[in-house]
Length: 152
Image 1 (tube, rainbow, N blue to C red):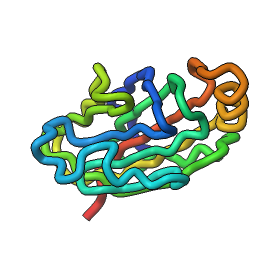
Image 2: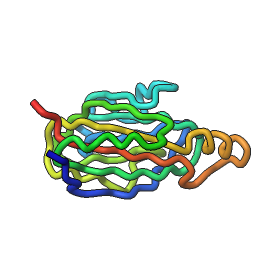
Image 3: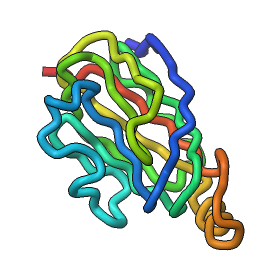
């Protein structure tokens, strides 16, 4: 059975010190909030009710497409520079994006529970070059984050 796309969110995420994260919207339910325990150099790192992404650029705004599916989406083996998967638990069914503080946008999963997340990224080499030579970049590094209910 082919998975169906339920919703899609386009986000501009402010990245500082090479990191940003997604976490349960109800901050009181996140034992270690972003950016605590961000692991340097690890592309995708799971925590309790949170996951972090490590960017190739120090300070910039990344373009993020977050998609919510009713099942595991087909594996788009496009020209990604990084790709990884992690489990994620949401209690409220809403996920806040954290960069330089809590972002304005929310990813609405539609329900709480256990989710599987696949993160992909391209533009890493370019954002590293631009942030070193020009200081900041806008939309050079691009992420696609897929969420789908975890089976069993």
